[in-house]
Image (cartoon, rainbow, N blue to C red):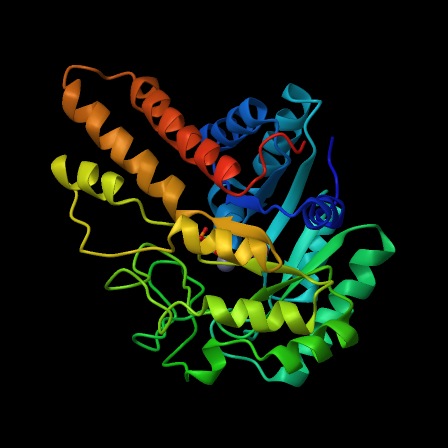
Length: 328
Ligand code: G3H
Ligand code: 13P
Ligand code: NA
Ligand code: ZN
């Protein structure tokens, strides 16, 4: 059944686990996530970005989610809008049946320019007022996602901030977070700790200076009753990078957020962990390998089946690592 984000995260907080929120764009991704959730007996957060809505179209997305719930009636499923750029965008998603929306007021409505604190409070408060009136949850974001190594917002996500970000903008301030939650009434808060979207997060295995897990501890100590959200939390598995490279792809050296660091976050209030890139890497690697190994094959289902299996295996691993297995 469809449930709100609040319901799922309240349970996660009570029992001390984290829930992966997977981005979906097509049928095979929805199937892969649902199959993994069924195997693990886990609650599900399916999230759709503006890019997903553009790619698949709102009606297809909605009906794929409906099909997921119809196929797995015993699993709780949150239908979450990822990175809404205005209260109006959130309203559209609410009307279309989403049970949760992200109002990302850390950026202006162009989705690129860093916004003032006052602007962020105002748009997020308005989104909460609307959404809560109809039982829909709201995730806000305070601080801008970006690399503490380069000051850049990250590649290939299409929503990156314009220009360079200052070090301060890329780390959420605990006192400001407390004020933000009080003023807006958000159900969950995305925080900035040095992660960014896409495959190119860190040029080396991250240490505390570029992945500020300690900042999570400080924020959680200040607002222990707020569900924290980590964006840009793909782990960028080296084994999938190797498979992509072996079969004609060229991905430069890069590192993601280690699962063990996410586990530390979960011990300090992180309840929702956003993952898109890992599924993309696994599916691309599996498709490249399948096509290379079966040169005479022209049925695309063959490569899609391999991709779906690879995606599902990633999801199982995350459900298990985040303590989410058996919690549905
Ligand atoms: O929020 C970032 C997600 O990875 C979505 O990416 O805008 O390419 O769909 P996208
Ligand atoms: P990744 O690019 O690390 O998978 O992050 C996805 C995300 O934060 C979606 O909102
Ligand atoms: Na989100
Ligand atoms: Zn994100």
